[in-house]
Amino acid sequence: MLSLERRAVDSRAMQWASPLLALVLTIITGMGIFMALGKDPVEGLTFFFLTPLSDKHGWAELGLKMAPLLLCAAGLTICYRAKLWNIGAEGHFLMGALWASVVALQLGGQSGPWVLPLVLIAGMVAGAVWALLAGLLKTQFHCNEILTTIMLNYIALNLLLYAVHGPLKDPYGFGFPQSEMFAASALLPKLIPETRLHIGLLFGLLAAVAVGVLFARTFIGFQLKVLGQDERAAAFAGFPAKRLTLLAFILAGGLAGLAGASEVTGPLGQLVPQVSPGYGYTAIIVVFLGRMQAVGIVLAAALLALTFMGGEMLQIAMALPKAITGLFQGLLLFYLLTCDAFIHYRIRIRRAPKAVAGEA
Image (cartoon, rainbow, N blue to C red; front, side, top):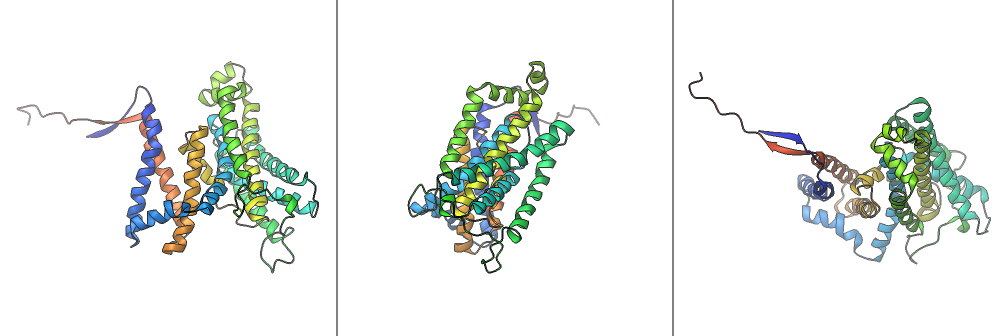
């Protein structure tokens, strides 16, 4: 008979093995799905994981998709280390994209070197303010941040849809819901010529490193960690819990807002309804898969960015639906959470008691 027994001490080995085990289980399950769909599983996995990285442009696209994941994940890490379950990175991202677009379009043909920084700052401020709403609802009215951030995501999405179908719609865009193209002065410079990779990737890498330094080297990071580990201990030590909560939300929102601003000023060059394929939600998986550590987040962001590329490749090569990306990401999260249970618990085999001789 099998049962779960709580460990006396959490397993450090399982803490680091869990993401790898989750990835292996995801691949095995993916092979089963390909077989169920009548596809060659080896060919499917090759198209999903290897073909997208077969040339320079593929690696550039990987970096392009890593950038928003890194920025969103870095911000969420700040919240999650403080046990603030912010699910709103998608909304912060969308608001950053929206208001960066507003500023870029309002500046029109301005060509000064200050245009791009102003556009990016607008995105950061918009994301931070949107996150601050959830922070204030938690600190002032004790609202559950999971619910408020999820609901704010839908509000942000509908505000963006209203903008591209209304005031920001390009009058010469043949009726398509999209803004005008931004001026060259409002676009991020490229990292690699003849590719779409821009300096947003550097923003993401710097954000991951900065968050690592925040928690390893600063007193504010220490306060946030204590707040997450034991709120009563934080209060006893005199740490300002409300201000720390608001700070965590503001930083998370600002980084996700920068991700949104980088997306519209980078590969898109305009505001469109599909500005995000779900980067804010996928960043949640990145945080947990990367164990809230800088190096782990970078590696996890690369893997999840690859799932977006692999899903696009499977649509072309094997005529599979776009949902295959979300399926693999969902499987990875499911197996990760399942494997994480064994950090705190272990399987124990209990033998049934032997029957006593002479008992009826």
